[in-house]
Length: 238
Image 1 (spheres, rainbow, N blue to C red):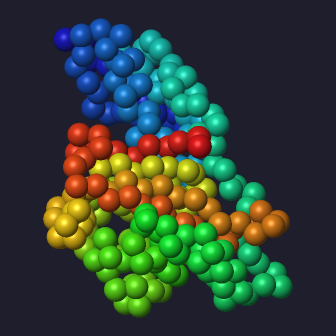
Image 2 (image 1 turned 135 degrees about the horizontal axis):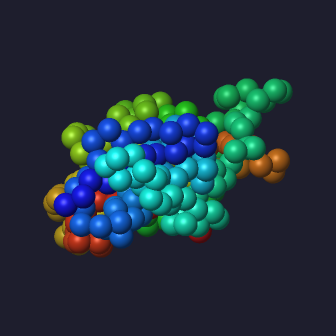
């Protein structure tokens, strides 16, 4: 089979593909590029880069360019634009303590009694509060995890920890993303602790001037997977 190389163009910089792929034809190479774009775009957002300026340049084994696949051909701009680019955390006359207290007041008002797991974080991803439902179903002590990074607050290891970290790095860049079918402990209908799955989304908490006060994690536990048990991270427009 012929060799195809998928070079990644990031703005004016090109990262060469030194290995390439043996594929039947150019159409198969195009499909490989399309499949790779969402994951590569997530990495770009995590690194505070704009994925909408990227493209895959498909070349043959002799280095001849055959096709360019812009990320905008696959990614809807409304979902993949870094939303809060102009909304920095509170600064100037308000201290970090005041910022966190403002966010906590809003969190308690909106999320303290809902039957979904909700966690309030600072913009730096430190846990500020977790509601009762979230504490019960995720088996954590609210006092013990307060001030801890959300990345270390739960007993996660290996790939689940890597997926969870990636999800939160996207949130830090102001991107609305959704984590589906992350394996972790849950409570079943009888109140027993069982292996299950979580689905999570993140919303920013903003003051009246649009400045970032914190982040709220909205997480739902399930005893059966919602998407076949394969953990996915999806960037969403809503």
